[in-house]
Image 1 (cartoon, rainbow, N blue to C red):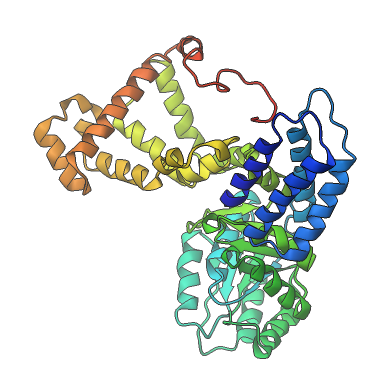
Image 2: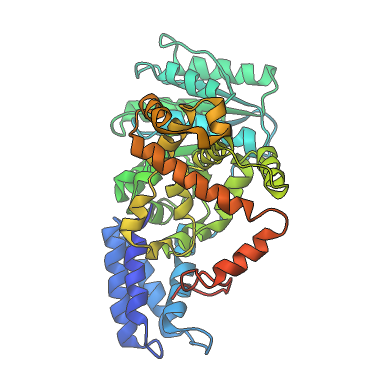
Length: 459
């Protein structure tokens, strides 16, 4: 997400290199580029105008200290304004009410309401330790009820049964009654979507709202629709009191216009980002972290939180102890690391959150392919237990068999074994206190900027 903006903002900073101070002329040129970047990202025009005016006013009055360059000063101003534009801080769900807290999901057809319902249930169970019930009131779309039953069961939520011949209001009231009797903390109600906002739809969801008195009414909208997402959210809010927005398919949106427009146009906060198809792919929306990501400074805090939530700590500690004692690193361990990486959304998702990734050439980014990780796992899965334990026995005929079994080429198997042997060799050096020694040896071989841990912007 935000690839286009990252690239354009990077060009703005390069343009300010070598400038001794911020002047009206270089601010004017830089802001013209910023304006074009925002419009290309499909940010709504009124939002762009207000943003540029605020940045211009602050930039003209900014003092450039000796320790900062003009580019760093402008980046700081833009970062602060982006954060303000998107809502200052993450606004969590209001769950501090007598249970069950009811969350009503609203939105157009195809926006991702049903999968977002399951993702939200998973998030509440994992992060907030809540017991969650989900129910589908979508009696119009074929298989909508079955879909929620499948994804709801997958995340371990209690799924209240419903059928297409029931009235939505009847389903909702029965689910609320069941949630109370079963002492559920949260009830998430998935409602029907339409191809466009219409009177019948609004009357139905308004009736559900009145009957359930939800603590949260979340509008689920596809980020790929750009500023149209903000307009749709505004039209919905005019008819129904929304408390926040879930922006879906953010991983497929290189522009990010919806994220920058919604708060300003609707006055309602984005509470979550959907960043993939997996039921774990839901992130709380932190404006300050997103602003940092847009400006190429990464989002390490979110990455650390993901690792804490999704990585199996016991397995990680067990492997660390194994390496420390100098015991062999096997292909089973290698596969385990690849699987843990997939849990974090794959390499592409992890790299997006690392500082300075906006400056990495596209051809290098293209080499980081999550399909490649899946292929490597398939190759290891095609080996016998003995081969995974003793990879040196994997010779000609075995390599052919493994390639056939994994649907890959022999050269893919050769490549994996070569990578594994290199990794194994490196990990042997980490035995005991070898890690510090290895880092000292690598110090002179690292690319510029990678040798130390100095702060500051990558300029």
